[in-house]
Image (tube, rainbow, N blue to C red; front, side):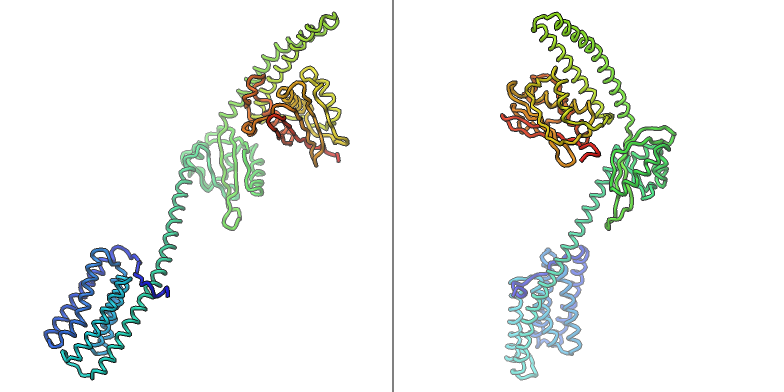
Length: 553
């Protein structure tokens, strides 16, 4: 029943120029029918009721349709349908050779267009009106108002058949209108979605073009052989060219210094295999022959089937960065040298004083003062080394001398050597038996452990123990330092290993906030990981891993 009720109206919207054209044609049909009606009345005025019902209803219906269309209440598609039905009905009338056929088809025409154009109850009302008009013809002919050649029973049969046709036409109209509406609605939705997708694609492409053109970095697309396909304006400026035509079509290797081309070719193959490579450093050559350092990242572009079709490379001139790194290295070297020279003098004299006091048997208070001087010197040396190492990490110049180290012997010796800077009496060592040697830098490992142990002592009560534990975990050895101190607040945990970060509790203590940052960097340089577990009021455990030395099981 949903196809039959309620009636539907056509909702398809044609181009804007169609409506005025169709209204003009409709006016022409109205004039032709009006002239034809007047001619018929003049020829045979006795059949005026029949002429009026047959032709007049069409004229009135068309006039009403025209008025509604001028007011924007009727869609142009419906006017087109009206004209097509009228032409069909006229052709049928001419072929049948009778005015009665024309009258019947005119009624049919009015029913269909009214139902389609007006829709809903208006279409039903026009259908009822047409049936009443048909019954009116029966009454007119039965009363002898117009001449009729058939018996009244034949006329009744004929007009009842017309009424049945009208009802069927009205039902078919509703079914057709609904089906056409749904079909066109689906097409319009699909078209709207396609247009929306195309618009979104155009906007996305425009945004991408603006981003590429305004990027401060050189962006280049090459084919799989490394020949440049396209590039952004910054690429032209970077290579000292006047326009992109001087670059497009040339091999990208032409812009790389000869000593770096073989390495660049190997990196290109690795990019194809891995999908992307980042932060590759080359020496590039400008158009005028000037050489400069550059950093490049590259990735593979694939088609819809996943097949590589091109490379995209992003290149940045790092001349200023290299210059800043060199200046920083020089500054840090100068600062560390200038600070360490007087510290060495203080340390030497403090050691002589300590040894002299011990030989002379002077009271312990002076010896404690001397020991405090030595600990202060040691802490200053640690802070200076932290600054130097921090600069080396940032410049990528940290070098490790990796050897196989037996942790049992190493930790025992470390606690003896660190007794001047650590309260070793608080530290208990637990090294599980059969622990394999680790692969580490002897001095850097000492820095890691001293940093973690000194922090554990600094942030825990002096009468609480500190546990140093080592055990094997697969191909690694896990070393942990556990204290029973105040713990770390949850909001500080994500920032704990950041450079210069200090908690509110630590700001009144010695240090510059580089200890954990450097410790993490040293652990990661060894190929390990550093993590922390902490509970406020109960203490913290810092655990780091080191790889097992090769040729050990």
